[in-house]
Structure formats: structure tokens, C-alpha cells
Length: 254
Image (tube, rainbow, N blue to C red; front, side, top):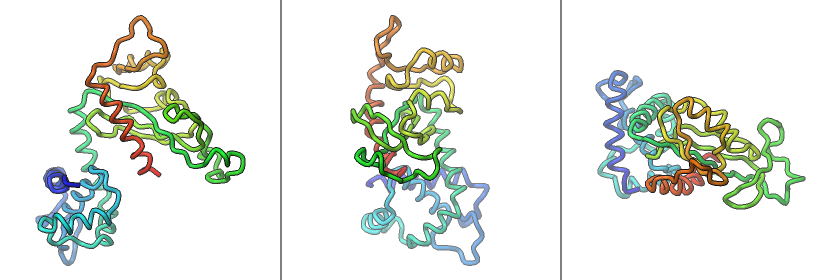
């Protein structure tokens, strides 16, 4: 939370650069008969700051701003107006986020792929639960979690993320979908990037097509082959960091 000031200033400068051809002299994207006290660029920058810092509680953010950053936001609007304008400016918010993501993508040389279970029903109710069963294509299923070493009923969150923290893409599948099958279906992966994953994402039939599109799929086999190579030490911390970040992604996705 102590990075709100520096992150907001950085995002505000990026918004002015990326949207300079779409805003008026007052910093508004839309026309207002009466100019608002907080312009559109500030709303967009504050929205990007919230998501970048992982703040999902606007009530907490507003109380923190009023307590510690009141001099920086002397004309902070109410949360109702902020949400209303944020929805109207969603296309511009996404545009700024995509441009920032593309800038950070060039600074990354590796990606990490992993999954986390999203249980929604207890195993004791396996035969009696009815939640999410209306559509068979989206109904939950039973799968095994290697992390928890047990079975669960629900879904899986799969994430491909750059080593600098930018999410490349993500998807939610049924719990019985194997990690390898998810990796086979993904598209639009940047070339010439090192892809790090655990044993669940590594197999000889999968490595060959990735090499054809200039990907280097790195992950240990179940048993060490002749060409086995250890990961560089700098990548070991990336896997541990992702393991701690994925449960938060799963909570936010639900």
C-alpha cells in the first residue's frame, strides 16, 4: 500500500503519453458539460494502480488515500462516481494496460507456466451436489492436486506469466484437464522466450512442436534423460514466487 503515490505518478505519466491524442486540454476523454474535479486521466491512472498493486477492496483503498495521501488527492470523488466512470472508461484502461504489458514483455527473457486448483465442492458431497451442473460443458469435475496431495471437485486456473510479473495469458478449465493438454491448446505465445514449467508440462511429444516455433520448454522429466540440464539458479526463485502468487489469482478469479 505504501507504493500508491509512486505508482500513481508513474501510471499518470504513461496515461498522458498513451492517450495524448484522445484527451482534451483538461485531461478528459469524454465531453462533460461541467468539468469534473477529477479528470479521466486520473481515474484511468488510479484504476491501473489498483490492479497493479493487487488491491481488490475499494473501501480499503479509499480509507488509505484519505488517511495517508489526502494531500495528493485533495479532490477525490466518491466511490460510486469512480465506479461509474471507471466502467465508461474501461476500453481506455485496457488500452493502457496492454501498452504497459507490451513494454514489460520486451524486458523479459522467460515465462513461467503453472496451475492451481479451485475447489468449489467438498468431496463428501461428490454424489449429491448440484452447483454449476446446469451446463455439462461448464460443470465442475473431479481432479487431483499434486500440491495438496489429494482429490478435489472444481476447476483449475492455468497461468502463463513473464518472470517480471506480467500475466501473458490465463484460462480456467475443469479439474480433470491435464496441464499438458492446456499447454497444447494455447496460442499467441511470444517466440524466443524460455518457458519454465514443472514435470506436468514436460513430455517428448510436446517439446518438439515448441522447438519448431522457437520456444525452449524447460522442465524436468519424471526420470532424468541423457540431455538433462539443471535450471539456472536465477529461475528457481521464479517458480517459488509463482507458487505463492497463483493462490491469490485463484481467489481474485472467483
